[in-house]
Each structure stands twice: as C-alpha cells, then as structure tokens.
Image: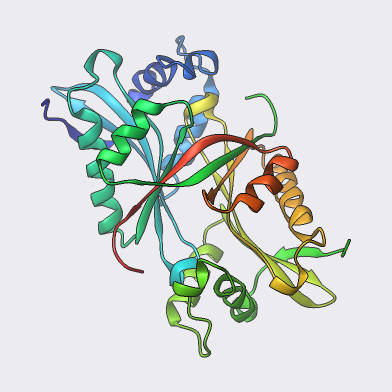
Length: 155
Length: 155
C-alpha cells in the first residue's frame, strides 16, 4: 500500500486537481483541464481557501499530487446542534487506483471530522458508481440515503 | 394552498424549529424539544448565523413558524468552479402538511440558489422516506445519487 501524506492544496496544485477531476467517466464532459486554466477554477479555489469550514485537500506521494477531495464542516440545528463533516469530489490519479490511497484519504478525512467534533460525516456518490459504493461500505459507511440534484443552469 | 413567507430565523424561532425537528419519525429519538433548550441548539444556531454561506430559514404563515430548512451555498472546484446550493433538515409542521408549504419552501430555496449563481442544488433524504422522494421528483429533482453517512459519535 502506497503511503501518502495529506495537506491543504495551494493554487499551484490546481492544474493537478482539475486534471484528476477531468480524468473521470463523468468529469470528462464537464471539466476543462487545458492550461491556462479557466479562471473560474481559481475563483472557486480562493472561495474555499477563504472559508474556514472548507478545505481543499491533496494527497501527496513522493512530492506528486495523487489524490484530491474537498472536506467541509457544516453546522446544523438537527441532532442537538451536531456538526457534520462533508466530503465532495474525491479523486485518485487513474494510474494509482486500487493501491489503498482512497482508503487512506477517507480515513484521514473521518479523523479530521472527529477532531472538529462532528457527530457524523456524509457524502454522496453517483448511483451508477457501484465500485465506489462497495468501497465506502467496506470502510463502514452506511448507504442510508438517496441523493437528489436539481440542475439550475449549465456550468 | 397556504401562502407562506420566508425569512432567516432568529434565536426566538429556535424552540419552534427544534419542535418541528423532534416531531418526526426519525427526529423524535435524536432531538430534545424541552425548554429551556439544550444550549447546543443555540450554539449551532449562532454558528449558522455567523457563516454567510449558511442560512437557517423559517416559513411563516400568519405570524406562526410552520416550516424550517437549512440552506447552504458551497464553493467547489468541480464543474468549472461551480457553486452548489445544499438543503438540509426540511420540516413542515405536522398539522399543516400536504397543503403546498413544502413545495413553496423548496422552490423558494432553488430560487435563492439561482440568485447566488449556483449551477445546481443538492439534498439527501433517508432512503426509507418514499413520500419525500416522490415529492422531490415531482418538483424536478433527479434521484441520481446514493447518500452515505458515517457515524462518528453519539450526538
């Protein structure tokens, strides 16, 4: 199993992050990894960086960015005011999958959620990503919910 | 159809909000609506109020709080830096259901997401809430995802 380290992304990591988002069955049609990057990517990165409850994380293997995810911490009234962690946009470099990197990422994220006092963590995965569902269930996640999306405009 | 208005909640609305969260098949075991409220509810409300990307909304009918939801706006790198709206903890007072209040709430929330430039909105609903699923599909939401939760500690 490859041993990766985790850190908050910098703007210099953005091309690698977008490349991983684009190198995906669904992402290939909605992302544009060409350089120079669409400035909206940098604007989004800056919005995340400015928000203490949002972290753009990269997984680093020998100085190379090999994984990415967004980790958020959400306050909420429900569950006696319990905070929730939320994981979005998880990707591992396509040539390094099935080596345990994803598992280390998700376990690391859950640990950060515990440190922040979250009582639970949540994520959604496209209903057709059956391999991902098995992966999350194997890590102890409960497939208890149905995820709905409403398209508001073209990105 | 009852005509409701929407506004951001104040601390004075908190007992009514918690009462609606508790008056629910799943909420009844995890909430405590007794007064004085558990101070964690107020702490969560204050965290939401302090975050410009999180809104605790109440639906008002003739001066009475008859519905609640949390509306969040999340930056993200994916989809060319597209912001997402997120709806959590939607409840309508149990004696006023099936009168169109929920529909007005969700349509109002989607409009706020459009105003904030979100390209999509998202929510999850417990897999067993089949009536809720039909409701969201009728309003145009796409049941495209599976929602996973990881319990980190008891609330």
